[in-house]
Length: 155
Image 1: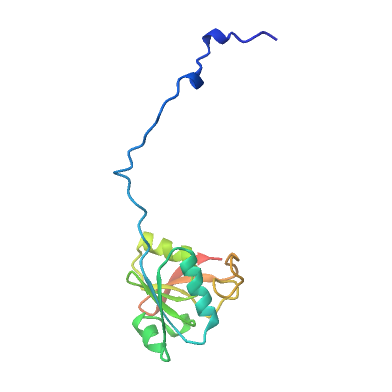
Image 2: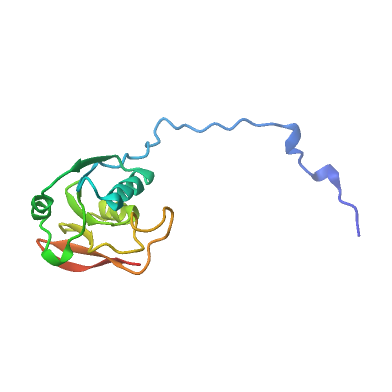
């Protein structure tokens, strides 16, 4: 094995350099919009879903209501698409235990729909499963004017 000729090796340790980055033009991360939720005062899974939303960076304003049907009508939700709580975010309706990542995708893609729903109360959805569990075994459905449009995400 031959020895390395160190006379031709540049020694960068002896010549320190300071590197600066101009961040004055960098964009700050865009804040997520407010999620306004209407739920029953006694619904624990709704409160757990709200915690999931907050844990994922969404500001949330929750309202207890004895008449959730009025918000489902406002959401243009079909009868078969309902769940336990109704939320509104940036012009879209969110029904039930829709994962925060689907809502972030919705807000990024901005499809021409009324909103998203996880019909019923899927067992492995945020708010229905142990905190930190991955969603599984159900679909998040996109809907428009009371009708299902298609599967937004399959879990």
